[in-house]
Length: 295
Image (tube, rainbow, N blue to C red; front, top):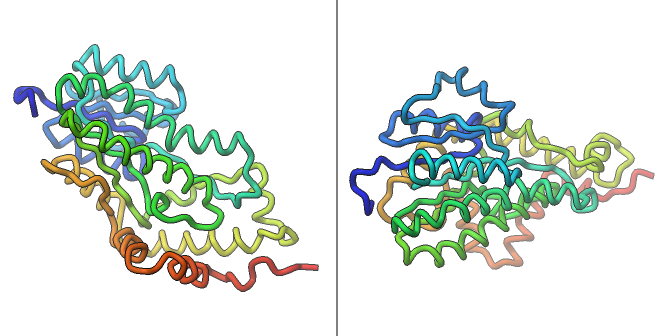
């Protein structure tokens, strides 16, 4: 670091559950000053996990979709600790809906959490990082940011957007000594898939056998649940991976955090694009039943 006596300030979003909470538990044992954030309704989870405020740890309410919240948290970091040295954009949500069952408010909600909020936090922390000529920005993406699955178009759109902007950012801020990394987890053994949201249109469609997309929802939701329940990687594994990326002197732009993320990345590289999509299509669960008329 340019300032060797400065204890780095870490801002972590979505820190009250899943990967975020697992990472928070690791960070409290490291020599950092921490700003752990979550929505105000989730702050109680920190105490339940044994995490409490101290001289070097602040628990901050933050709705990443709120401009006022984003400004308040960054202003607090600037005032109390002279800015953020390491920003970890982890907060995220996922919608399950085929494209026909998505409306503009759904698109905005998904993008606001997974793309617009993180990019604005980056905008707010960059001036002090540039002045210090040091900074780390880690955006938690997904295999959904390198490949898309049916019924998860909204989620992939938000992660594709995050990955594209982060790649451009990597070029822009490298001359200032700022490192940017996309961490790409795959399937993780956790209950997080149960938090996937449905849109106003996809919810009813997923349970009505008369709906032309009912088979899409039924097979894909079961497919994802099985992979999540059988996955070898845990939130703790991914948290350890993120910590390693934070501490590397020259971290990569993209880093697959689980075995399946590595596998999907290699498939994209090795197979011709047309064959790649054909293989994935034929591998979809129950795909022969999709689109069949129920008349």
